[in-house]
Length: 175
Image: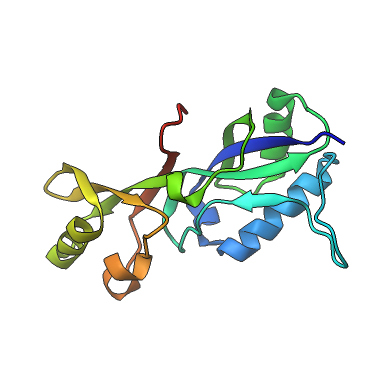
């Protein structure tokens, strides 16, 4: 049976930014089941829907362009899907767009632009070592990190994530 892969981009802000990654994964799975999509399931004793999530977003970072992929057995109307899933998702989570893809994303091709408020010079120094600063103002910096090698604890001092936003993108892919 032929399967299709749908890449779904969403924004996670407001109260939703306080939902942990694992809880959010479960929330997405339940939302997709609630929509009665023809989901493809894994094989084995405890089958699960085939959903691939992007790298975890720490609490309370705002996700401007997060994504996941879901495998289904038949093509669906994307506009209706976006409209229906946005009525189910919690406040602060909005599906922005989605499209069909052939291949599963590779973590080595996923990058993120972090907008980081400058409260401490240490953050800027660590960001320069692990990423590339693309914009710098008096009160914030924008840094590109490769998600395959990125670790939040290495950059953000004392786990202070408030005020940070992340925008994911896939290298060499037009979004």
